[in-house]
Image (cartoon, rainbow, N blue to C red; front, side):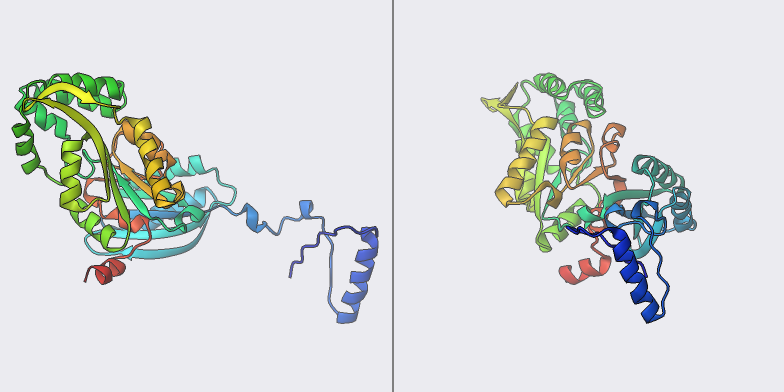
Length: 351
C-alpha cells in the first residue's frame, strides 16, 4: 500500500511524524518506509495521466490490432481497454490508452502511418473530450455531404467547367486564397440562368452514407448544421430535404433570372465558418467541446481546429494536419462510431 502524506500547517519536524508512524507500525506488526515523493519511482500521480481514445475503422482484416499495438508499445503507451463498436460491413473499435511519457505528435504520426499501412482510418481524442457529450454536429457541404463540388457542375453549364474546376482544386488545397478564388469563379458564371441551378439541384448526389448519418443523428437528438463555402441556393435545399437545423452559405446575386457574377455580403471563408460555429454554440448554450466538425478542404481548418472533435473527411492534406483524425470516402457512418455510438445503439434508435 502507498500512502501519500502532505503535512500542512505543522510546526513539528517530519522526524517526529516518522517516529510516531514507526511506533504504530511496530504495534501493528507491519513494515513502513519513508521516501520523498520526488524520489519515488513506483507511482505516477493521477493528474499526470494522459488518456486518449483511439477510434479505428475500416474493412476487417488480419493484423489491425497487432499493428496499432506495436506502435503503442514502441511509444511505451498502455492499452487500458479495447471495445468493439461495429463489426460487419465496417469494422470499428475503440482503444483506450494512457500515453504515459509519450509525445503525442510523434505518436500520432506513427499511428497515421500504421493506419495507411493496414488500410484503416483513425481518430484520436483526449478522453476528457471524448466523454463530453456532443450536442451539435457541423458539416461542410461540397465533397462532404454532397459528392463533388457544386460550383464545378454549375460551371459546366456555363461552359467554363475545366477552368473553374482547376481553381476549385487549388483553393481546397489551400494553394490560393479561398475568397479571391471564389469571387473569380463566380464572376465566370455571369449570365447563368437560375433555372440551370434547378437542374443542378435535381441531380445532386449525396456522399455515400451521408443521408443515413444525418437521419440517425437527428433521431438521437443531435442538432446538425451545414456551414458551406458554397451557395445558399443549395444549402437551403439540403436543409429542407435532409432536416438540417442550421444552414449557411454564400448568397449569389440574381437579376432578371440570371446570375450577375457577384456574391451578396460577406464570403463564408475559413474565418467566417469558425465564427458561424461560435454563433451556433452561443445559441445552443454549449461549448466548443460539445461540437463535432466534419469537412474536407482548407477553408474548414479553423472550424475543425476549434471544435471538440474535428474530423477530416476524404480530405486534403492541409486539413488532416489540424484534424483529430481522418475518415475516407466510404466511411461516413464512422462519425457515429467516433462518438462511441455502436451499431446496436443505432439499430435500437432507428427501429
